[in-house]
Amino acid sequence: MSKTLHNQVAIISGGLGDIGRAVALELARRGAFVAISDVRPSSHANEFLEAIRSLGVRARYDNVDVSSATEVATWIRNIESEFGVPTLIIPNAAIVTLKGVRSVTPEEWLRELSINLTGAFHMAQSAAMRLLDAKKPGRIVFIGSWAAHAPHPNITTYCVAKAGLRMLCKCMALDLAPAGILVNEVAPGYVNAGLSAQLWAKTPGSREKAAERVPTRELIEPHEVALEVAHLCEPENRHTTGSVILMDGGLSLVTPANK
Ligand SMILES: NC(=O)c1ccc[n+]([C@@H]2O[C@H](COP(=O)([O-])OP(=O)(O)OC[C@H]3O[C@@H](n4cnc5c(N)ncnc54)[C@H](O)[C@@H]3O)[C@@H](O)[C@H]2O)c1
Image (cartoon, rainbow, N blue to C red; front, side, top):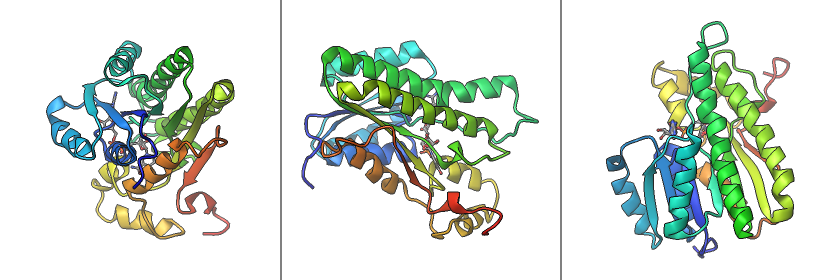
């Protein structure tokens, strides 16, 4: 593979999760230096960092809670000192609370929004300000979800956070386009890993049922999400901004009238 992202510095939150790892590997394969963060202990990152470095790029791991603006700003400053200004920004960290509006507590609501929405904002804002100061172009790719536009009564907070993320993406895209910073969202449907897999593990047969609901009858693999993210990061993408790459196998097309 040609090193089309050579000279780029990628930062990925939730980088030890399933989709985060796949994105980190794909951007590294294309030549980017990679800085990942997560709330997991550093010992969980060592083997993965070696796998990234074996692709011939530099890599680092930091323990960063994205809900803290201070931790995120310090992380980005430290990366800049070691690798240079981050140019490919992937806000990916998220949690999901399996509760609807009748049972979710105010604390659970706030915590999920502070990670899934405000955490993504902290990262995108901090990184965008550094790019603007340095007068460098860049790419921000939010990891959204089809749940941003499809109500799910048992993951209400998650849907609200992803809907907010979508508007954040569009506002930032409009603001930052003149500076050459393109801002987009990749919105997967059911991924055969990560948050969905954690939920499916609780109910036997639920993974199969989910796959049956998808018009393509297929679940998405993390590396397929990574390919969409990487495509948006490529220098040849000069015009796509404020867009949502919806990759849900047609899930959003299913309505009571046609199922
Ligand atoms: N799995 C799916 O079906 C699916 C579908 C659509 C969108 N997504 C999105 O993909 C992204 C990645 O999710 P995943 O499925 O790989 O799940 P995952 O649980 O494997 O990864 C999420 C990572 O975020 C980390 N994290 C949690 N709280 C954090 C915090 N406060 N600060 C920093 N990191 C934190 C977790 O430790 C974890 O490693 C999320 O934005 C999710 O909403 C997933």
